[in-house]
Image: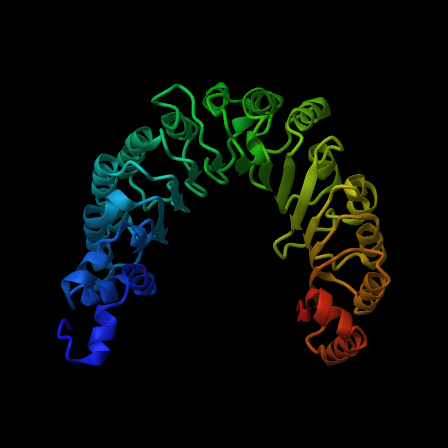
Length: 439
């Protein structure tokens, strides 16, 4: 390699370090290790900190020899390059049994312990979908993992800026203890983004917990907060207003049918927060919460709603009448709503006219995703209004449910509609429309 008599090798040998590092970024770990054996220069490039700032470590939940190697290489990586890490994502994919969760816990104990000692630059940590309430997590293993994670968060709390523990499914006490770890050093946390969606176990009324309110009161610089509606209360909104109004930009709120969502939250609390946090946008994600009276209790006019997603998850219920929601509830946000997602099994009611009228009334709506029973002519009317600039949609994604297996006629009509508005679709829209038999 270092023999200058070979022009081709000489060219590679003289490659500037910045170019060499760029080449190494495209290689996986195994190829990087092989390339590092070529010469001393390439070996030095292998240990360049810029190559190891971002890392995703995946643990497969199925037992196999190959997956055993994953646990070993995770520790090897942290010992070798952990000091460079700035963004770390840990994935545990569907653990099969208690043996694997125990192995994961032991590996994570070593990984977090070493990282806590050698790293002083980690700003982003994501460990999603742990589902610690599953039976594959024995109580001792679960408790030890949470303890190790809490200790690590205490060490990293000074510079950690993003934490994602979505889907952890911990108890109220465990969850609040982990949140308190972020404010351990200074009794307050300046982390800017936290994702605690599905963080707590199902069915817990977090909104009434003093422990939770105390934990959240220590966050003083939140920009983005993602969580469940069963955490929402007047007290929480007042806490956000008091400590994070200067920074708060986004609240992402999931409301699931199995989470408590009947609590009373006053519009005045939302109005105060919106006034103190003028950049605030709120995004709602409803799953199987479709009844108008339930939605009306949650979707208050004082909320600066940017996005609404209503998903029935293919379930059908005659009590889920969408017409009052489309006519009376959602138009309250016609001046602010920008994104609308509707996935509804409305086989008992047609919504074409009401949906079109809602779209035309929302002057800032640019994203539309609809899975529903609709007439194909709905698409022609929608595109005609878009061509006449009566709405500003730039993304249209529609799945038209049908009650018949055979959809050739509907498909033909959709092709004709596409041909009619081809120039508009190709030049201005992110457009995808199909038929889908619901039989």
